[in-house]
Image (cartoon, rainbow, N blue to C red; front, side):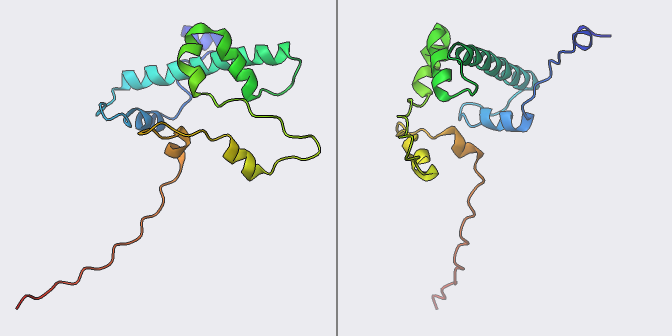
Length: 146
């Protein structure tokens, strides 16, 4: 029996390999991805997300709340120097609380959280959208030059 089976901990990544590989190959400098690199990136991402979730949960407990919100994640990121250095600028700014008697419509809330992107970049959710069907090209009619 292996050590991982005894401890009940799996080292196999939970993320879909094809999706991770597709994200990795979005970089124009990456043509091929080895299985070892794919495993390491997947597992590293899982460990980082677990770390971030644990830190955010600590903040939630300190604030005596029951739901993890973006503000809690921002606070957890601010408390950890290496994470703050690369991630804080990518997190959305905390939103202004809505008036209790006037909840904002869902469409307005979604638009207010979208920050302008620097030139040449796109949001991660763009990658996960289904491709829009392209309109068929009009048939080309050959021109007889005689």
